[in-house]
Image (cartoon, rainbow, N blue to C red; front, side, top):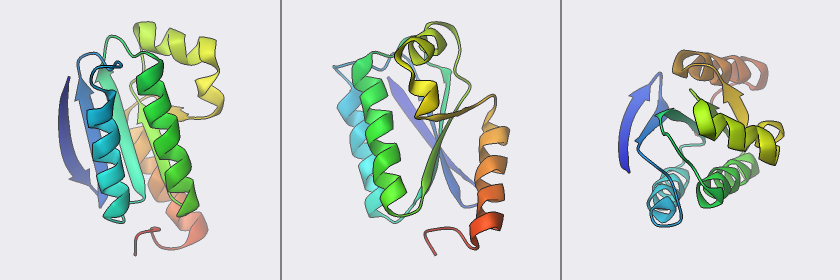
Length: 123
């Protein structure tokens, strides 16, 4: 698994490449925890290049989302497809995680929520 990071409109975008499973989910968890400790409470996770994700990876995303909610933040997941989309649907994760079609849609969604609640939660 490779993790690529960038900032778009002050929002961290974490793009994952490769499988996310029991053996490497901790790397993703540690990164998300680091972002939260750094007061980055809006995060986009791009799964465009993730062909497989097991329950460890899904659990990592859900845990991060609930941690962010404590700070009135949010986690958006985008570009979910193939077997990952099937797993999200079968496990009901679509009702817990906010899944959007594209990275741009995820960023726009977070910015729109700022408009409803004022400034970003990390300011």
